[in-house]
Amino acid sequence: MKFAASFPWMRFISLSAIAALSMILPVQAQLPTLPDTNNQAQPIDPNDPNTLRPEAKSNSLLSVDGGKRLMNEASNAVSSQNYNQAAKKLQDARVVFNQLSNFYQQLNSSFSGIDNRIAETLRKQALETAQMRDEATYQLALVHRAQNKPELAVPLLVQIIKSQNPTRELGKKAYQQLFELGFVDSAYPRGSRKTSSSSGK
Image (cartoon, rainbow, N blue to C red; front, side, top):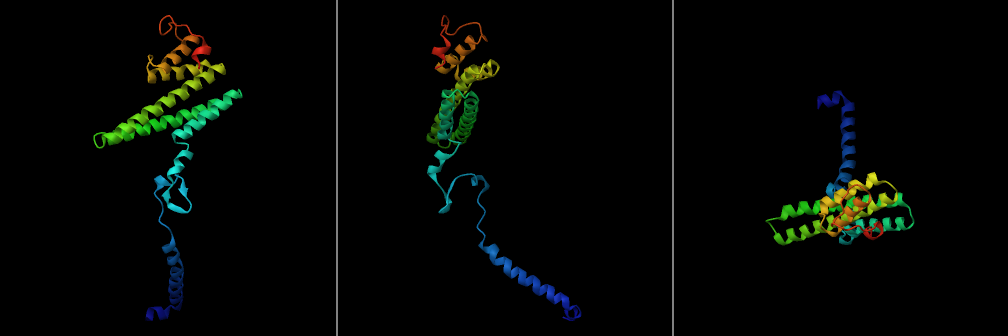
């Protein structure tokens, strides 16, 4: 105590520090627990912030509904001959559907051998969203043709054929577009020479 008596300002600092701590600690105790960073971007119910809203997923861009919404907006832009806007929307839709397909494939791999019912459902969702991605890609290729940009359309059409297989309907339509652009010399199926108006729809 002699030490403190020799330096009276030390008692002042100690009392000040205790007073400051007594003001801070109650505030810290009232702070809510930080949410998981993985959930920060997900929509929440303001009346119950700890519970995610199931219906919120339809409003999310990273969803089938979000991708379809972009496709509809692209269709409206095409109707207005706003091809730049249509191309942007279709490119965004491709990204959404591609991400969804990849995520479903990853989840399918995780559940394979653990719960085959869930794994099969996820496999179907991966295939369905991949199909939607290829349809968005095909529409984007048609928009690039309308813009007279075959150099942008050709790589997309080749991607579709690789993904779909030339024997499937969308694969055939993509190959027909390549044939009409003069990128390939042989028609497929052999002997078919459809016009762009019939193959583009």
